[in-house]
Amino acid sequence: MLPRVALLEGSRDPAALASVLDAADTALRTWEPCWTGFLDPAVREEVLQRLEPLAELEVHSEGGFAGAERQCLLLQRNQDERGLERQIPAADLDGLEISGNFLFDPAEPADLRQALLDLGTAPEAIGDLWMRGDRGGQGVLSGAAVRSLDGLAGLVRSVEVQLQARPIDTLQVPMRRQPRRWHSVEASCRLDAVASAGFGVSRTRMAELIRSGQVRVNWGVISRSSRELAAGDRVQIAGRGELAVLSIQPTKRQRWRIELERR
Image (cartoon, rainbow, N blue to C red):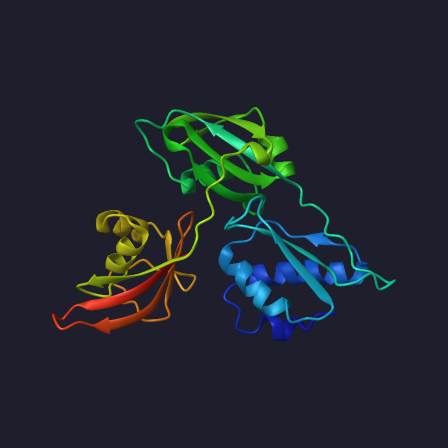
């Protein structure tokens, strides 16, 4: 059995972590591999930090494509009873096409997610979602969720959409972002100022994202644009990756030279 009390101590999301520990206990007890549902990056990061040091447990991630933010975890014993390495079973994941005309009502991935939730899809069955311009969006979901949604119609904001199952290898998945490091000189270290420079969006748009709860700092949701950032902080936006503040130095003109890394 896992040391649950020690593993849960100080967790940012004890309920989500406890659910993963239940799956890990099952895998250890039955010797059968166990997949979790899709996990937020914050939960997955914490789970990996807490479970990877355990010698008896092997953990693998799968999100359907390289660089996926939301991923499922495979939990299994490191070896079978004969001492042989075990093969990694494939996750039951599939692609979904969400077709509609978004020319006059542009949507975000969060809007696609809400539409799927409104159709009764479980949150843990939804992986990464992304827009494809004004033609609609695509995403990776559990195979069972895709089978239940295939052929249905729905509503994303004010746009009627059609849902269709598609093999993952036929999706136009987002390109995996390579880390990029650079310096930016800003008048302040406010979240909206630094994040707008780091993610390449206007400060007004960044303020909207912050107000709507889509921006996190060190995995905690932040609702104040005026939140001051410090060296070591990490800013996350779903679908846009992560921005790390590596260093902050004052300039001679009373501004701030900030070293950033976009991941």
